[in-house]
Structure formats: structure tokens, C-alpha cells
Length: 66
Length: 272
Image 1 (cartoon, each protein chain N blue to C red):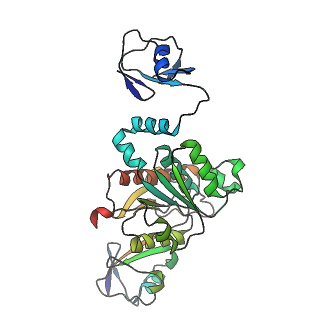
Image 2 (cartoon, rainbow over the protein chains, first blue to last red):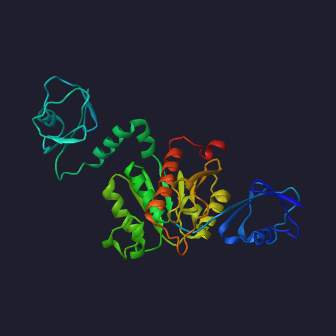
């Protein structure tokens, strides 16, 4: 399956959910904001939110400091 | 034409500063022409910009508003004065954003933090040594009113959680995220995208260390939703937060807020 991640094509083998995508990217689920096909995904739905072929995923990641 | 204390005044041949002072500032004891201090008996020239100051006398709120109006042009100042912003987190970013917005005469600011001023904050945050131990909300309140007493301030002394954001900040024109904690930065952006459809937003990510000035940028996430920073320079051992680069990011945030208020960039309500 291929998804578009922040504008680039990404091949996702063995990745079926948002949580698995974050784990693959080694991103902390708490410090990112995820839009799946322009919809904001609440943080408590990362596990059950499935990814499908041709999904468009935007990940905005935050680093600390202010 | 002359400009005297930001007021336009017709030029007359042979006019001296002391004559102008009688009309504009009778108690003046400091006389400035085009930025240079001079004496009261000096004759002015057409086009001069003149400032007549009475040492120790503070301008009233109305005088400050009128000075800002003259400096920024009345149309622009009216919009700034009618606007309400909120600042989440009053650290290096938040205290600097607040200072910039107070100085330009923003109408109202909601200031939110739950922390007290600590010695380690003073390498970048706009507090004073004698304010160590004070809640940041109250310390900043005092400092901002010394910069511009005409700004209206509301303090939210609370460790915010996601559900608080629309309750406290759902009605402001621009919400400025200046949190330190990356998880709270994400909470704030999720909240603004999910629950606050009309509020414009200026967030932040990546301004630690002393890397290039020019990697700090203002990025559009969606119309009315902006993110400032280099996106990668998190605070960590060996890469601390320091006043210069944090200040660059803070003033990106402040200027983007001003641009939103003045309609130079899209607000969210424009498209919904």
C-alpha cells in the first residue's frame, strides 16, 4: 500500500494504523498532530485509525522549547 | 509643516522651541529636534520633527494612544486597539511576544502560565532579577503595564489541559502558542484545528541554540494557522534556549499576529 506522507509517496508494508506509522517513523504520538485526508485525528484514536491505500497523511511534529 | 509631539503643526518663519513648548508642553525641559537634544531658544526649520518632554512626567493613557495613533497611522491603530490576543506560556517566546504587542498598543491580551519566575529563566525571558519567585502572569502584567498602561490584561493562572483551550480562548482574534512542552504544543494545535474554527493561530517549534537566523521561518499550515521556527532545534543538553534566537522566533510570532490582525494574511473566518 502507498500513502502520501507530507506530500511524498511512502510505501507502507506491515503498517495498517496511524499508531504503527508513527512507530515506523519513531515519532512520539504525544508530540505530533496528524491529519488524515484533511481530518484531524484525536490522539486517543491513533491505535484504531486504519490507513488505506492512497490516503493522504500530514504529520506536524513539535520539538520542545519556548 | 512641523511634527510636534506627533501632532502636525504649521511652520512659521523664526519660530523657536520655547514658543512651541508654550502651546504643546508648557513644562518641557528637554527639547529634541530630529532626534537630537538641543536648547529651548533654537529656531526650528520647516519639516522638523520635534519632541518636547517634561522630565519625570508620564503621559496619560489617552496621550499614549494618541502617540501610537500618530506613529502607526490612525486607521491601523484603531484595528490594533480593537483586537484581542491570547498567549499560551509566558517563557522566552511568550514574554517577548507580549512585550512587542503591548508596545504597539494591542487592545487586550489574555496571558496564561502556571509557573513562577526562576533564576534559570532570566537568560531569555523578559523578567527582572527582583521578580524571581513571582508567578509569571503577575510579573509580566506589571512589566507590560510599565511599557504601555493602556493595554487591557487578563491573567489565566492555570496549568492548561486540552478542554480548557476553547473555554478560555475561543473568542480571541489570534491565539499564540508559546509553550515549552512539545506535547502541549501538539495539544494546542489539535484543539485549534478541531474545536476553534474561527480563531487564528500562531504556533512555534524549533528555536533552541544559536543556529542560523534564517532557518527560523513562518510556515502556513492552513489559512489562518501558522507555525514559526526551524522545526528541528529542540531544547536539549548542549542546545539550550537563548535570548537571541528565541527572540527571533518570538518576533516572527508577533509580526505574524499583527499581519493577521491587519488583514495582510488570511484569517480563518475569511474562508468559512
